[in-house]
Amino acid sequence: MTGKFAAASEAARRVKDGQVIGLGSGTTAELAIEEIGRRMRDESIEIIGIPTSIMSEKTALQAGIEISSLDEHGELDLTIDGADEIDPALNLIKGLGGALLREKIVAEASRVELIIADRTKLVERLGTKAPLPVEITRFAPGHFAARLSKLGCTPILRSDGGKPFVTDNGNYVIDCKFAEIKNPSDLEFKIKSIAGVVETGLFIGIADEAIIGMEDGSTRSMSKSE
Image (cartoon, rainbow, N blue to C red; front, side, top):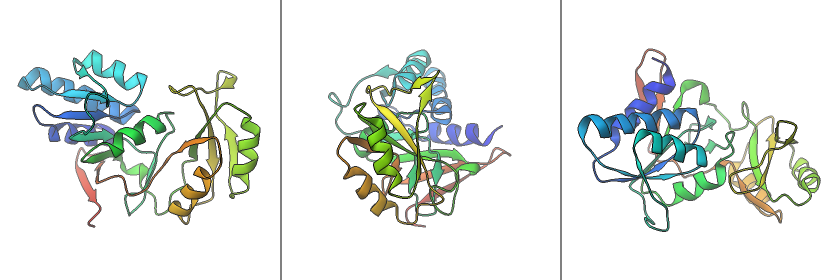
């Protein structure tokens, strides 16, 4: 059993009959969606899912989960999502899958934001392993790269098959490689002060708990209170 599956399985066990659940994006979140679907079949529970990407919606429909929207359900009981980096204060980098904007919108609409990951995602400081994704409008990506580089990163416009990667929202993503991010809140403010930046992959103070899966199938929980 991989750490990812262990974390996903534990998160799926937290889901209760009748809840409205935010469905995250990425490989670990997709495992959780599949496990939720299995519980629905085996235990005859019903939930409503709010997907954070086209891919997570497709996975949910294949799992037999009823899909709705934030317009119909403005407050969610729980969102289960992955992360690319997790620091000791439960601040995150997310968005390597390109769904950062919808993931943050759904997270902020949730009573509980539950993050699932294996232990390779744990870092002492954000930015030491993963680049920071920044979603931008498609107008003048070189301009954004130049502005972002002044904040101390190496910016790279994300590509897909030789062309710029396009998010589900029709935007581009610049991946910003920092040596480390010493002050995530300050960096978030500076990036979002650039006109045309849509969202960043910094999730600061949003996660309530993280379930970390180990290779032996065990899990451990990290919470804000630690």
